[in-house]
Length: 134
Image (cartoon, rainbow, N blue to C red; front, side):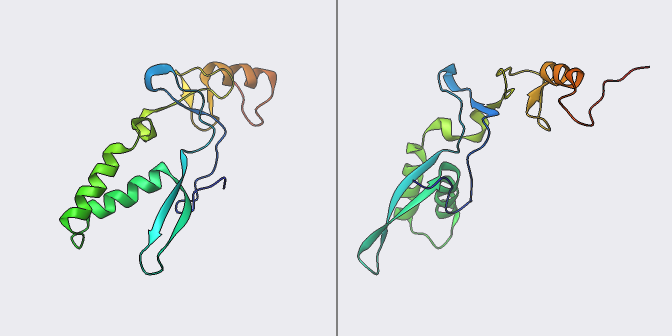
């Protein structure tokens, strides 16, 4: 299976973001990539695509919003959107420290929590980062 989405180009990350829904899902090191079959009406065959959940949702929303789509297409797209997993939503992912998973005090620039940044800055592991002294 391909390691990236064919539409958005989403690739696996470093695991700083953890799905936090119901507190039971493990770390998510790769985007929610799914393999889907799409029919080609003119040729009478199907194509297998590797897509992220974000790309699938974007395409379905475009069908729902498009004025050229029929009521049946809109209804089918809406039902497919309703069948998508809730955990695929970006709002259900919480940023966490990449080392120990601490959810609070997360700094995006480093992918670490403030506690871990302080420890690593004192140890000299973060080049160019110094602690303040006055």
